[in-house]
Length: 334
Image 1 (cartoon, one colour):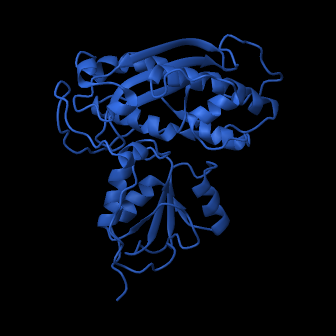
Image 2 (cartoon, one colour):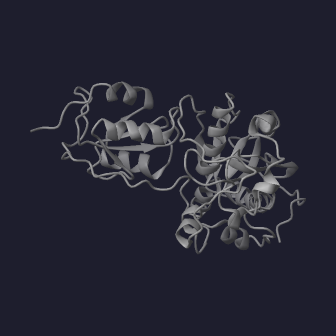
Image 3 (tube, one colour):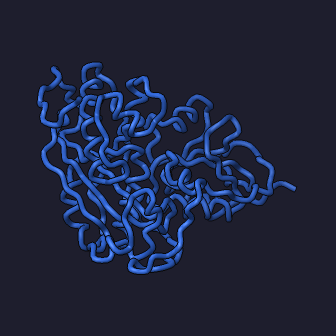
């Protein structure tokens, strides 16, 4: 079993690697943009992945706790917990100056970013590392991308799945040998930029903690909660306009164009996608030869979308440029 206090280090250590990590897990009321954090845990690690300390807190989400059958946190348990603004400073201290590490890191980061936006604060996170992406970089022979599979590969025993503190512990134990394997092979760490939200929107919350409300408890809902996406897929109506082809930088966007997004945006992604659809454009979930445009603030990131865009020659613009283009979308032909 990989032990947390085993402090042997690989040598030589890549100088380009980060100097500290914050291994994070958050449990939430769901996956949508109005969902809230109900518990959070952080293991702080040094540059070689050795544990420095850990921290855990419950959080009162001010609404129905959601999938209790998964995280086990009822309204009664959460009613006396602190609100997120009350733990925001301590949480920030745990994250400050470190790379946020999580299993499916985009989900955890987006939930954290939204909570800080609601609290009118900014999380001190500049980069994140997804252990799913790292496992792929290392070509680990895993049957799937679940945390339990990564843990089993390194002999780490899960004690309480979907408990934020235990999930963070398990991930810290599994991350350390992953980090050392990457260092020994001089593998590029899959670091991505984190952008705090400057604009976001949420639907009205249905109920406060203390009044156990109804929540979908079907097998489909449970499966949806466990998806590898940080938010549930949204079924949008089909774009009514034909695809006019690729975006030309000397011309405006045109209704029917297929627009894909990659990486963080300062405007909440779901809100930006809503505006894209309202303008008569099609939101593409992946990049193909038919994609008209890729919007990303980190074009050099080694994500599947940016790599495909480069291979296909798909035009790429950043969020600021895209926001300007959305203001003047040309009507569809005919």
